[in-house]
Image (cartoon, rainbow, N blue to C red; front, side):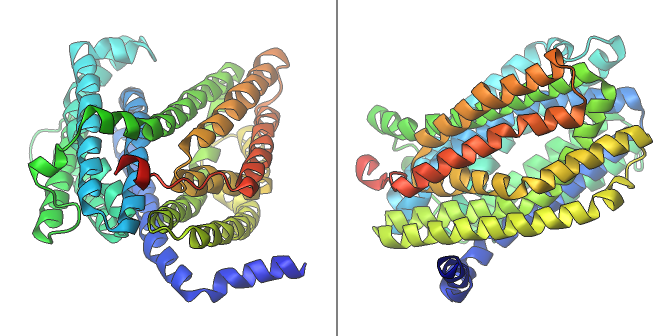
Length: 459
């Protein structure tokens, strides 16, 4: 007990740690929360057009979801290097990795744009074959694809800025872009200053907002002469050997996020086989869960940067100290958020206009989520915050990939399609994965093998 009390008091006694934590985590929390909220407003606006319109936009955005997963993997992989090189104050290599991230993101973006532009109706038909949705979704996708090119650029700059300790600028620029998107949606969808463009208006608004975001972000980076204000020569100082060494770390991070994204699709498909009520339950609970989980996303972002900076600065002892403190913090935050979620679940569900049966199942799922919030908080902290920040992306991939695809997915499919259990029990069974993942993460954390200084092998 004395040891636990010492760890807890150590977290709150270290003022330098807390100051850096809040500087990095709070902007990410605010950015993600406002992003979720404004996206919900976006959905409500499109929903006023009708069921076909909201279904078409939702299906078209599934294509973006896959693109987004790949982008996160590439950019977070580059961010691992950038945070460690920032610890060394090695600006030259930081700019090389920003360049690698831009080139990689643009290549992925161009592939997705080309495939989507060539046959948008085919992309939509993979999810739904109704003529009205094919037409609406296809017209929306062809326009919104332009935004992909700008999203790739802003994504690598956002993660790079956080990796060098500046989380405020990405937050401010992102919020301005989201607000622009909402205002333009209102004007273009409903024709407040001209013809009503419907879903095409929503797509145009998204493209304009992404262009504005990119211009503002790059203009501020270069006008302030930040560490990321690289010349074209510095950005393209990339050799085949450099790419090979970099992707030995980036590829596991990429595969990790892609595996997670594909598994999420399988989970949703399994719930869909139970029935539309099950899908509604999961969508409601995921929406509520995500609003609570923005706190952990912020903490993980801070952990990854702080641990990476320390390792790059050859302060291994400090990085291990930070990791222990973030583990304790994840436990405490998971405990508090789980308790709040459990206490507010009945009130939160009143915000949704659903049947009593759906509400009852959703309440059971929310109670289940609250019960395992500590475990989920520890899992994401270990995998995304500590291991990835420490440069160990391979073990993160192995632990998450194996537990998800060999435990979570099979149990969900068996519970839903073979045993025909109700949705709340299927969800509970699937959480076995989280417990196994946590045990494996703790074992690896205690081994200390997650500390890998990448600056020596790629400088």
